[in-house]
Length: 380
Image (cartoon, rainbow, N blue to C red; front, side):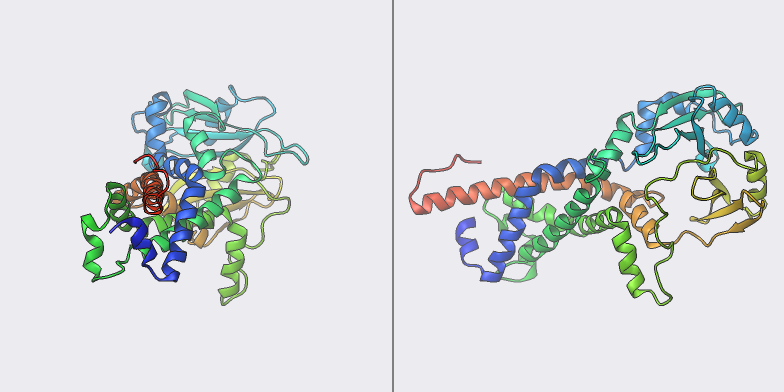
């Protein structure tokens, strides 16, 4: 039976879902494919960056062994005099470079200031590399995947693409269910009359659940404030954890001055490590006069805060918020390699589904014209 005749025999509700599924795929094909493929390329972004820029990771596995101020002093030799240090990332798992991130002073009412990263050898603070954070292939891929290179409207567009993909997955699953016969009929390779239809049905079913997860988590990440509000409605103890966003929105600029020096602040925070592994250390900002040491133990991260005015320290609760969970689930950071492979494949399959869906649509038009006696559409 032809695609056209099979569609005409479906109940009106099924035809409605078919039209919705089809038009989402056709209208968003050009946008969904590059966003999905860029996400696949970012699954192993650190490995990819090491392959592209091996000089940044030319270390022999030594852990950070020098005072924090040594790395800062060395980084300043290649930073602009006006740049302010924002954070230092320690070697992951005890191996790799120390990475210093600095930011230019914020302009009133302007966009977020540019940031620079400096890669240093952990044993002797030797300079390995430095670059603008907005340059390089990996950073371009991150910006495109998160906001399509558009500062103001890009993130909402990507978020709505995630919503559209989720709807497409759900309608596709409904349409995958066989019109006649048992469930086993859905797994038959020859259930569709064309190769494009067979590929679309089979790949679409087996990747449906991972695609639904990636679509939902992508939309969640794109609309964090809206999602926090929804969480607060269902929370038993008031608003969602984390409170309202900081005044002014956006990324806070590092403070121009601090009372404590970095070594003093890090020593105070390290007193509360309790066997945890330091991940990164952040400087006070113009919004909060606090140093923050992120540590990890047993796969759970938390922040140790040092008040810059008083020197008092406190350990925040573990970072188990929904937002962090959604982000790690979306990009696979710290997850089993099997899930990372699934994410990688899940970013490539939408391209196949989009192309095969387009071929199915063109084939349906060709069949429809043949039945109506009109001029044929070129075969696909």
